[in-house]
Image (cartoon, rainbow, N blue to C red; front, top):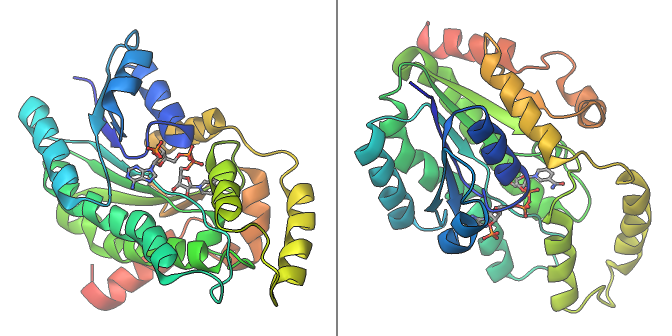
Length: 279
Ligand SMILES: NC(=O)c1ccc[n+]([C@@H]2O[C@H](COP(=O)([O-])OP(=O)(O)OC[C@H]3O[C@@H](n4cnc5c(N)ncnc54)[C@H](OP(=O)(O)O)[C@@H]3O)[C@@H](O)[C@H]2O)c1
């Protein structure tokens, strides 16, 4: 029987590339999108690929989606929480509305997805929960503080879940940590900056000017989303499954000083499990 994966944010970028790759490999793929008709029409030729409405900021939307998967299969093998977007503004510049918007999708969206999907994942013989964070979930970066705070939150969430999901529910937990990927991500970030006044004439202007100068150099060779999908494929075969995995050498080099003692995160997590649960 083919394995079943549900992916949030599968209308483009990493989520779409992963959905297409896994469908091509014969997995049954539930690709979460906010526009089912458009995406189903575009990929109608692709067997095993089912677009399904998933608005991660809505618990009701997520519950409806997993109820449909439950009805069709009764279980789920891999839950990939991938929906998200970046945000570039200083804490002192952003409105509280913008900050809530970032957290609604990038943090609460992941919580809604896990809360709705967990009962189905528990019914798998061997479940796997994966969330896309970022190297920005490990290393704070200038003017990305709100996005980094959101991704750090997801790192904390899954690191905590990992301490007991495997021994309790037989569910592995992994944080997928990309560096720069060539997707809509940057256009959305920069589009929002443009829509909200561009580079503002304020005390942050010298910093943002400096940041944008180095940004152009740092992102010269972004990874493709297809290559991130390949990392997802490799991850499925790993035993034991890492708690953390970077998606490229560049991402690994960037976070190296933070993770060099425990690159997969397993040693630290198992130590906490032992200390707190004696397992
Ligand atoms: N690209 C990078 O450089 C990079 C680096 C590190 C981490 N990441 C992370 O990678 C993940 C995927 O991003 P990407 O690079 O593939 O960008 P992307 O091409 O813009 O894809 C983002 C996906 O998330 C979906 N999404 C956004 N808000 C949503 C919501 N409220 N409910 C449901 N779906 C929502 C988008 O759907 P719509 O099409 O409907 O908007 C889209 O399918 C994100 O978590 C991002 O933070 C990206």
